[in-house]
Length: 115
Image 1 (cartoon, rainbow, N blue to C red):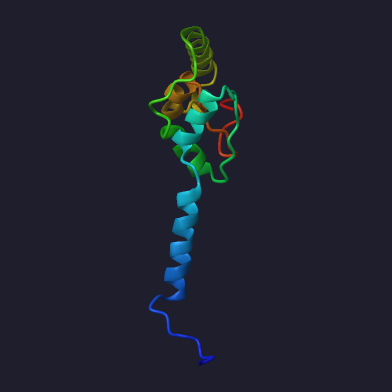
Image 2 (cartoon, rainbow, N blue to C red):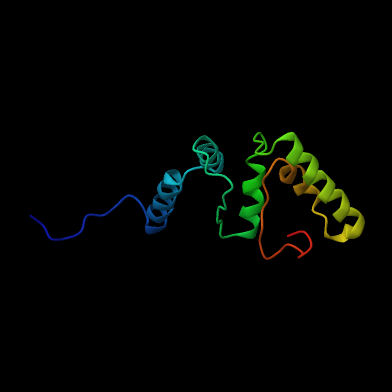
């Protein structure tokens, strides 16, 4: 039996890339987690994502989900309309609809009034 290492047909880079791909495959998707939180009545909830861009992207993955009832949606719209008048420069128009449906991202890149 030889003690020499066998040559591999994959480079270290390819092996590392495959390992990362396998790790990502084991992480539940945003929609799956949100559905579980709803099903098990675990809302409200905060989900930590360690990237500003991914925080915002995570909200867009939930575009088919609504977590608020009609009364809550009306109250949110009223608050957004007031903010729009009082401080229009703080508006994140791309995040208004998700907010009305009960979801929002929150990270250091947001203006304090929007938070």
